[in-house]
Image 1 (cartoon, rainbow, N blue to C red):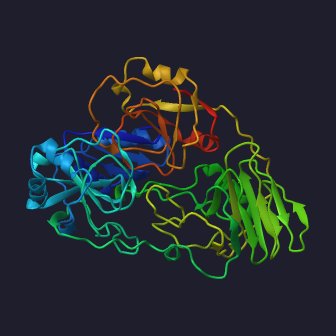
Image 2: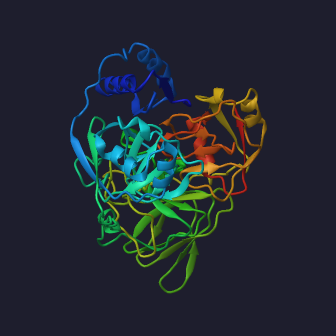
Image 3: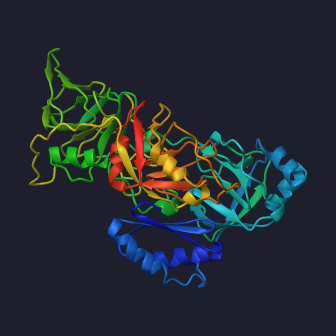
Length: 502
């Protein structure tokens, strides 16, 4: 699975849970994530040099050893009014009342997490409830939806895309980072669904729970098209359904933090296509790098001055700095000396657009508290403005599911030019080009996936997963872009062309 991970295929769920438990109890050198799925375990490491020792370790594990799991009973009240309840009844040959009776008859067991924070794959239900995923996934499944797919049942913790069959909804909070254990349902838990006539709506979580409302060092005057706080992410949380998130162009984060004298891990603002406008509430030292945006500071008296890119600069109290649209690249990164002092969520200040973890996207009026610089830290020297190739060639490692495609399709992937459409976002780049053809029919059981994966849905058009990708996926991955090339993918505006090479 790319240059920093391996996908281990096993006979079934008992072996999967055994391997996962052994790796969690005795991690391999550099181990980052262990993601269990129906028949696979995905293991990622910090560095490509650690993949070979990982493979050697995996070959020594005895998957027949039983895994110890936490045992608890969680009761979930459900109003069975799902949009697909009638379709499930038709497909199974049961009436709607019989579907509800079968779903609530016995406790289900949480086998593994994934897809989204708090999402648990539940097994052990009535075998008559086995149904396929929807042919066309929904772009937005409401939070609290109770669903079926294959032999599994689950509850969607928050609004997200999904292709499962919806049979009802619940008001139970599946995921809350304010709890000691954010996930209500964890592997090993038994889950008893009970039918009720009505459930209360889930109250929305206020943005003030995440971004501190204190005297700010900076204030967002205008966020531009889309601006978020990002750092180097939250690795090691994929078993909870939380992808790494973090900045899409990690080299730019390290560079801009270096310019203002911060640690490489401090949070910065990632802005899409320029347009960000910030006001200094007190004197601040800032720097901007990444996309080649223009910068100008507007003074309180209405005067203006040009501000250099990739160079530390002083923004005095009351001054406002404006970003123009970039001449090249797509995402600009803004750092302030001392870092943005907002609450960490699961060890990171990054906004995860897929899972909803972390601070909300910036809006006009958002105050941004600034921390104190580390004693002895110094600002950096000006650095060259980066240049972004309009048509980069990205290196890929084939597999793990390239055998799901017709012979020659991997070569066809690399021979073609792929265009980035406007629909791309932090979850992934949807690519336009010649559709690739599968050699296998049917569905691939959901399995762990990684940043850089080229997943091929039924349309045959690749999706290149970026930082906010889903933790698991059910479409085959033909190849994975190597980690070192992903920063370039983050800087590709709509209309750009990509090539791939093995």
